[in-house]
Length: 231
Image (cartoon, rainbow, N blue to C red; front, side):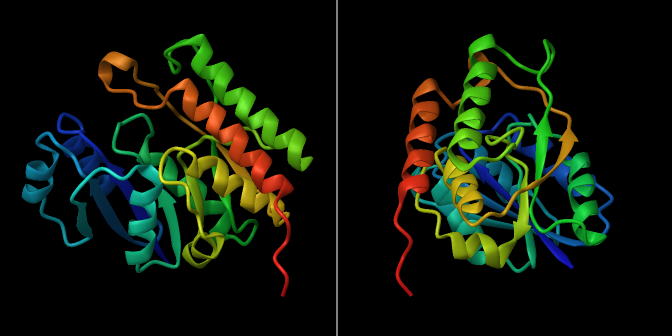
């Protein structure tokens, strides 16, 4: 199996070098490629990426910022692997956890695996950030009669062909809710494994806001009530 690690990047000049180094240093149980999409960065991110040298790394550049969902769509369209996982470049997630996500797939227990974050005082920068995450996840569980633990997790591992079939249209952070809503609508329940996490604060460049949480709930409602397409 080949795993495509998809990394959307926007204005991460101070972190992207470490993000690449950490992702490529992991001892993966399968072949991997690291597909980075520079989503119209206006700082020195592009220059740092231009200096990176690893046969497993490919870089695609958007001339202007289009949002996380659009960056992932570009990455998926160019992925060569059978499976994919998303890894943000902000150093909040530890790529050393990716092999743990692969384990249930490699031994035949799961097809879709989510990394479930455990929030604590050292891993969440604000009370309302955690409550927002829990609120969106609860909305999904109520709407789809499911019990997932972390809808907004970046670590979503699944077959590339499955992601393509979902036809994700959300251009920004709403893609997280759209992916999960469409999976749950198809009665695909993600297998969850615990992962480590350290949220950065606004002063460190945290981009998601409460508006993204409201959008996520709206998207979940839309997916739950959307009519099935006639065959």
